[in-house]
Length: 317
Image 1 (tube, rainbow, N blue to C red):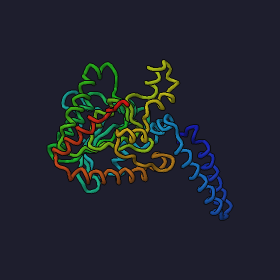
Image 2: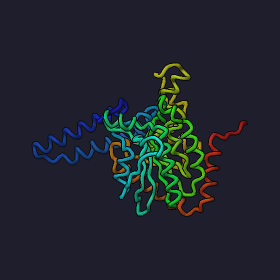
Image 3: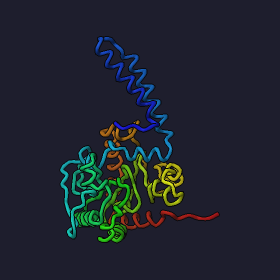
Image 4: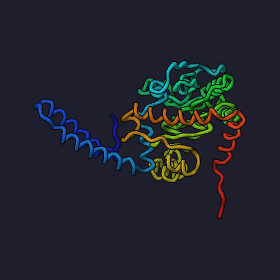
């Protein structure tokens, strides 16, 4: 597993635990007391390290290649997933998936960005950066869910919408703008959760929800730290400085009212214990869906509209 510099003390302890466990098995001795002491020490150290992460370090965790992606959550949370394909205009964008599934006994539309696990899959998934046909597919499916009266659950995990020439020629900005407009008018609950990267309009294109949740080590920002540093400082190496200035961490976003809840992650991040992370996500989704499904369509539309009208509002002293 890939490790970052700030994780090295934890990794060293885990190595000692592994070596002691292996040695105890080879010589047939009872090392339970020593192992328990080392494991407690590791857990305390992990809590301290992850509680004190800098903003850019959380960005690194959000980008961890072993972090659970949309398909992992579908496997761990849902049953009867039936993927639907295509925007009926150009193509089927594999960077953005969607379909109907059963979540805790409730039929829902699930959609979201999907990254790849290796080079080949990342090329096919375009590193989770959707094209305009991906956003048009998402809106087609959300409209279908609206007609069927089914709640929508959106998983956000993208560096941003794909900025290539072809995507711009096919109307990338227009596709996202139409999604922003039309998602406001949906008469069913829309619940969004940022599970990794929440980059710019690429995230907003499926992120206009009645509630927006975010995982503890995810981020949500108008631009990536590297992009911000390149524009403002003319130096992408100042990304850590930019990340701090952008206020993109879960705690910052909750404070500003951008998100409604932070979903805790297992110690060491979601990539260390995907099953546990999925259960924490499921508990939050079910709780919010229960509340939202009790609201009438007009109330859902009005609440969603007012939520996003409040974003960025401030008063000067």
